[in-house]
Length: 169
Image (cartoon, rainbow, N blue to C red):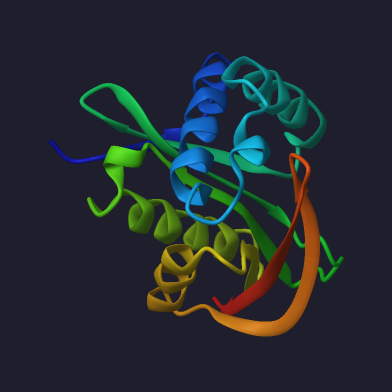
């Protein structure tokens, strides 16, 4: 069965949080210590998404991917975090670990880029963990390139370097 995409609803957000936690652990466990990935709980991640969408829902967009009626991924986008009105920010693409390599991430990325273009943005940006080589390759295959900008963020107690990527729409 092929994957289908649809706008997320409030009823999806607890499942999105649980998926987000599973995705983080699977994607980051090869380079982050276990204590960095021990929290938050799937329930806390769900509550995080409920609260975040309540604050950002007017100018952000979450799309969920389903396969055979099962939530298998999501994307989240919104305005640029650097304030550039011509740029949209792809905040997240997360997949169930067993969904990698099945085209779902690509479908979510293509959908997000089309949504950004429909909003009038001419450029897209994102932040990716420097050590997440598979994600970096995924974005590079999708036409994204590192801009040279870097920042550090916390995942649990671990300070993690991130790279900014961008592409034209």
